[in-house]
Amino acid sequence: MTAATGMSSYVTSELVRLDRERILHPLLPDGREDRTVLVKGEGCRVWDADGREYLDASAVLGLMQVGHGRRELAAVAAEQMCRLEYFHTWGTITNDRAIELAARLTDLAPKGLDRVFYTSGGAEGNEIALRLARFYHHRKGASGRNWILSRHTAYHGIGYGSGSLSGSPVYHEGFGPVVPNVHFLTPPHPYQKQWYDGEDPTDFCVRELETAINKIGPHRIAAMIGEPVMGGYGAVVPPSDYWPRVAEVLRRHGILLIFDEVVTAFGRTGRWFSAEHFGVVPDILVTAKGITSGYIPHGAVLVNEQVAEVVGADGGFPIGYTYTGHPTACAVALANLDIIEKEGLLANATETGAYLAAELRDRLLDLPAVGDVRQIGLMLAIQLVSDKESRDDLPGGTLQVTDVLREQAGIIVRSNPHALIVTPPLVLDRGTADKIVDGFRFVLERLGTDGFVH
Ligand SMILES: Cc1ncc(COP(=O)(O)O)c(C=O)c1O
Image (tube, rainbow, N blue to C red; front, side, top):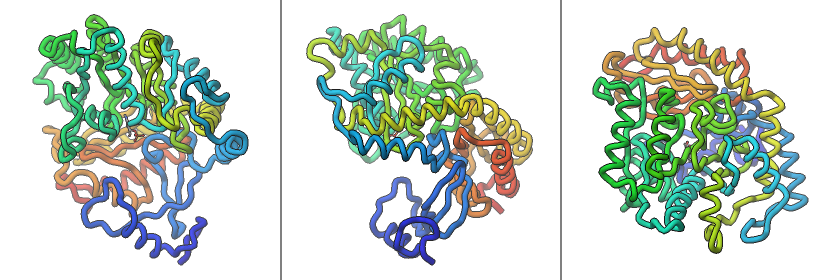
């Protein structure tokens, strides 16, 4: 059979063979020969080369805010490419699109985040955040302030700096020495109450933070980085007092706060920025993904005036990426933000997210292997457990479950070893939410605590 909908002249079996032979895939499970060759997308749906339809309950990787196949974004990109496809923004050179987007972003951002440094993705943004924080203290004559506090289980990307800040051993082991002077703290995860020795999670985490600061020395710490809501670990929403109390401790010691909002920004949690839920404004806020809904790689690091002025003094901030301020990416971002605003997608994330969570809880929490359903906006996670009391993971993890969901229910969803991560496009309607719930019920009611779908 020829590819049903795409432009490819290869038949599906040839595409699969070529893929196996020529592409080094990230995260390919051992021994897997099969491939799902996607060729088309529209709204919350995508199609493979044989014409099979799937429901994209993951918004690809938590970023397809406006849904697949938006021709207006393609038109904006084409128009911009015909006018000024690309130029850098180094030194005194700039472009109209980069300026317009910076004005838009800083108007939307929490008060005080008034400067923008452009990137092409999340890891790139966190590399810049790490460098900004250390360079800020260096410029202030405190080069010894170069430690960064991060958190176990955090995900900040796979650059050398961002990977070193990510809190799982898989990003460190086997890759040689990591970036030095990074210290990991316990994140607040109310469902994993066994992490806190019976203490309130915020009290535990704040005490641990203060102990770490005293041990390392406040005068040696540049910044703390955290995802306001942990995405990769499965929609881990902290208690409401966690970020305000952490921010107060950091401020007292002159330590900068970096929020990694690569997943959470631009509506995923029902607000433009998830910082708004916690009433905390960081010094540096990293975005990417949803800024263009993935139509073109892009990212923006928002920086407060105090940091921007210090790093920009004395000859300026001396580093930049080739694609910093890419006009086509900026034009697509502007059009994408317009769609989010005009179609009321923040409100939809709040309303449809609450509806989806309520339905999932109602239909799934009675099942033996479903431990928890967490949600904020359209960022949800279904934690799978081998025992509801101990809250231990399923033996063998969750991969088999995501495969069965795709094969038997036509639902594409991501997972980590503990949870299914459900982050549909922000255009999700109730009817499609119901289909997701039905698909999950159909598969998870056959999931045993042995980790197998029977
Ligand atoms: C919170 C967070 N930070 C950073 C990244 C890395 O972004 P990228 O893959 O665009 O480098 C991700 C990716 O999922 C993420 O979830």
